[in-house]
Each structure stands twice: as structure tokens, then as C-alpha cells.
Amino acid sequence: MRSGVFRRYYKVKVVSKTDVLGDYKFAICYENCEGLKGYVTEKIFDCMLSGCISIYWGAENVLNYISSKCFIDRRNFKDEQSLYDFFKSINAITFNTYQEKIAAFIDSQSAKKFYIEIMLKKSHL
Image (cartoon, rainbow, N blue to C red; front, side, top):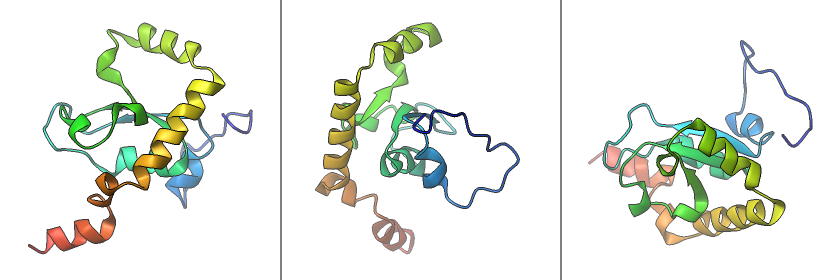
């Protein structure tokens, strides 16, 4: 938590998802269905654009779209305890490396296919 204080958002109107996510270093980012090829929604991008690192669980082929260096893949952990242990091991250098990789991805050609303008054009096909 960047502010050092847990902020309560439950039952509060949130104007901007990125403002809320921006208060945290990490966010659980599970898709509505797990394992469906190509089902990569706005959830992981909201986290990236907000500056927090996603703990992602969703499309089985997410690595075809987004580098593994941009998020924490929940599939790599056998249970919540091993995921928690991994979090405890993350230092400032590792965190900053994730941030650098996320920024590079957002500026890359690979990310452009997910831009809203592109998605809107595809929806009219």
C-alpha cells in the first residue's frame, strides 16, 4: 500500500478504477473464467496502467499476448501459501523491474492490439 493505510472502498462509489488500483502495489486479477484461450480482458491492463502488479489467473495462453515479466502468474504457485511466500520475497529491485517491464510493454506494438480504438473497430466487423 503506497499510503501506508488500508483504504476502504467497500460500498463506496468509485469514480476511477485506476485511482483505486494506484493505491496498491499488487492486485488480484482473476478473469471471470479461467483457462479460456484468448480471454484477456481489461482487468490486467487496468492494473498495469495504474502502476500495480497483477496476480493474474485467466487465459491459458496469456503469454501469447503479455510477457510473463509484466505480471505474477497465479498458475505458477501450488497454493495461496506459496504465493504469499513469493510476495514476502519481493524486494524493491524486483518490484521496480516489474514496473519497468510493464512500462515497456504498454509502449510496445504488442500492447497496441488492445487499445480501445482497435477494439472498437474490431467490434464493428
